Image (cartoon, rainbow, N blue to C red; front, side):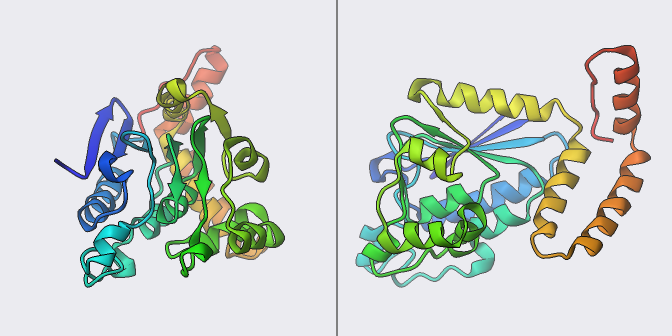
Length: 257
């Protein structure tokens, strides 16, 4: 059985972690497949949004500690370089990624969720930043994402105390966009994805790229890059379609060109 399920619905790609018997604990195969799928979809002009979720009761229960304890897998004898870690790829792809957190997101799963652009959390799910209780640190982006998402003091509170975070608290902290009834989670994620996919894909990709670069640029440098991107977008067919649709008072139909 594949550790990752892949599905496409029109302009939406759905990636589902698929080790439900282990609460979707990360395996080497899952890491490799997830990493390649993210890169493939980012290079696919027909895909405009990615949804990442888990099969069964959990989103992702961290690295597979049973495999690590037996000397196999990540944390055991096997070694995975940072170039192969999907959280690094998530930060690089220009496609928007929605995380549908269907169950506990613990350890690596917590970092994986933070690496997505939008997070919808089931009312049965929870975030579990239990690194300090396992003698490790957020190994896949959490130390970078947390202070930027919630601020220094909150990041320290989350990391040092390591308490579980229920859905409503996750929204309050800015770690999730919305709490969704469990049986409506995927439908809601697809609704959000469809609304994003209906917008101009070149503009969406450019916006995400500029959001990312803006985290490490000064204001003057960033506004220069924004201007350069605008000059490119002004020459696109999507820009012309957006203007014509506005004048005609109709919904635009974007081609991504």
